[in-house]
Length: 338
Ligand SMILES: [Zn+2]
Image: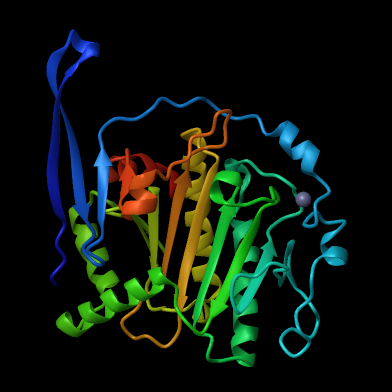
């Protein structure tokens, strides 16, 4: 195994007005991702929480949207008959249909629940079990129709800071014959690791992280949950699904394990006064060196005088700055997992 956790310590010296202009040193840590070699910066200061935002007015004013139960079967698009003959895919309360505003070859939306708005601690494993099952059924049916579409992502953008214009909880399901940048980086790095070591990177990482115990949260069935050493998002929690590269081969047990991990992470976010998040499941078929990965990150919460968490560092330097030390996040979030 050749997994290395590389860090560089940086330090800024200055005379602080908060300490009578005494000289102080402020450390920053640069961490290098063991797989992709991408750098992240862990800063050691943070702004205090502004408390919880009251969503009642926003929810009241926007309810009765296209995704609300009285509209969803009347006002949303239907699949081509040759892909989904019944038009939409429904499992429990989740409803899947094509995205009217797609960004690729196959774009779908999965409405997760009847409720127009949910706080992060109101999402349940059942909501995600049904939603992910619909997303996976969409992918299976589409791949039966077009087997060249090997690259899929199932994502959630929650609230405006997460990039969603619609409050009503929903997933995005996007499939293409070409990978995204992130998928290509993951694939290339996993493949060259496999060629050098003859083993899967994610299996090796899980084994090492289990031994170290600093960033490994727990396993729920075949899904191993851990905190990224060099995060690319705030409060990043990762799940690696043993024995699968694509969501199309997942059974009920793995779907349920993913759902439980997502819900556990969201409950932690709620307790930290966060309210907006993104997650993505990167699903790739036909690659022996790749293992299915989910990443969940928080976004700066919606609040008056909203502060964007992507500065010139992230947008123009491709380097994340995060004020959460991954090992502390792991310690804090562990009790939220079953
Ligand atoms: Zn709605």
